[in-house]
Image 1 (tube, rainbow, N blue to C red):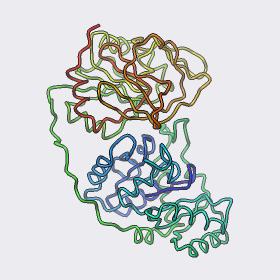
Image 2: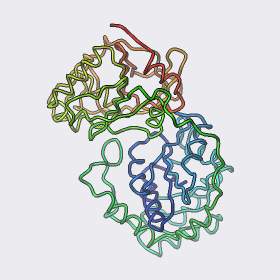
Image 3: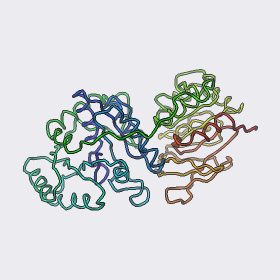
Image 4: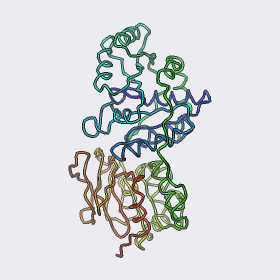
Length: 435
């Protein structure tokens, strides 16, 4: 596990560099990401040539996390798990944290420390992370933003005093910096991420002892916990998933679950003019606010989605998908763009306000978990029918709601349902609401 004392220490840079460096050596590499982030996994997939997988102890059970880990580790030689936030930062104290995942999976931890404003004092910081939880195996340390060998000598000597292996230091390098968007790392198609990741791997190979890192973190592969039947339960049923520049925030295992429930096809609300014939439509999150002109211009698709919903079609919309189903989206310049107009709501990017956190949705004796992360604000939804209750990680009610109109369910929450196949199948194929 690549972890850090805090965000912005450089763990994503180190993770991408490690994935690409070992992949270039011809190793079979598997990336994982702790927490609900779906942007980092996009870069992981590019760096490793293998699908990045989320591991999250709030949104799923320990057994499911173990299952995913063993499933995707099979036949791999190098496994890199990127932590989230600080190593011990959980939804509530250190529960569900990266440290909890490291203990569950018995992962050695490499700590990435931003050392630009410290020298020998780094020893006290690393010592604290090593001993805060005796069950954590802190195997080594990488120091980031270090400009000179003389500076690193202080850091190296401090590590030797406390018995933690120093693996080298990384000087600042602007050429390996991935631009950020307000929801995290940028995934703009105009940026040459492959080149940036190659440069990052070069940077790590030049400054870090990767052979020593591989040696001190060597572990046997996990044993198998069993597997799902890969055959579709209802192969005659069609599940249509929105996927294009505006709608791309999905969890790989969510899609794998849908593939077990029916035949999955993809369509683009931006570019296609017709909906595929489908028994269920999934409008995932994304950046519709960055593509509102193209979405608003595609009148045929707006009409097709609206008619599908009005005629009782089953649909699940999350965050960006929910925005798309509303009456309008107002962009950051204040210009309004007409959307599907199934819900009488408007979302606006003017005066952006951050809303984020884990969410638990309780309804009809089931609980779905997920996370909410958006900057848009919602108006006009006061009269929309909502279902169930939505709570944060501390089981406190939150202001957001899950709306249901006909057979359409929508909210700002990105749900993780890979352990909810039974309810998902019921919602997709058997639950019918007549208007």
